[in-house]
Length: 300
Ligand code: NAD
Ligand code: MG
Image (cartoon, rainbow, N blue to C red):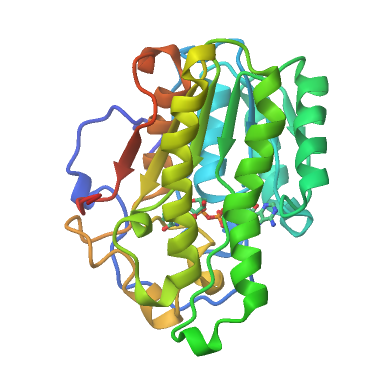
């Protein structure tokens, strides 16, 4: 993408980004954006902010790469300070995000650690509040996806780890954050089209995404009375390290995105504007909603 284009530049969306076939590119989980080919677009050169989140304080999980990185860049350019969580092995990707947030003139607080642990989740919220001076936005983006063809080969340890990362952590983080969230605050969860149209090889993952969707609907109704909104984003295929690092078999990485009407995967930069909308007061009457960003497949 050239420096003169931003997220508002009119163009044909089917030709805006790379289409399959892609090279096979195995990495071990959680993978690094740095090692992907082509490089994902997180909005580094394109995202233009307008102060839509001026002065807000946000905690974003999975903020080192993929959708979380694009959200961190967009939030910073919209005027928010951000706390960034990721796994310690992703420090190289996270450094890049810290640099980009600081280049936008905002605070970036790096808080690496495993959110599969309740005590760490509580500590993550406490540290974010202490170092940002409060919390207005919680964005749950972190996720684990490991493709396994056959239930007979799906170990209980994986089933549990996927639920810990995708569902339990969201519960622990929401629970720890809510007592501190002021009216006007927002929570945004990351579900998936897999919540609605599960793939056979993503038995555990798709089940966690259905849980995230239901959790979002229920929590939204529970906390609306205190002026806190809760929504979710449901991406279709997006070009991030989640996929080549075991989220899909390599033969599916080669044709990743070909099954959607747009015939290409989305890029993280195409998700960020929806998170910005749901975080900002512009979406004041939107709660308990799931916003699909799928390249044309339905959330049904
Ligand atoms: P990604 O690999 O860039 O991001 C996932 C992040 O999760 C990792 O960077 C890592 O920091 C974090 N993570 C994983 N396990 C963790 C743990 N135990 N503790 C702390 N952090 C942990 O990939 P992405 O595609 O941007 O994924 C972001 C979200 O989007 C996930 O919830 C994923 O399920 C969802 N999603 C992705 C796609 C897609 O096609 N890429 C589609 C639908 C939904
Ligand atoms: Mg990562």
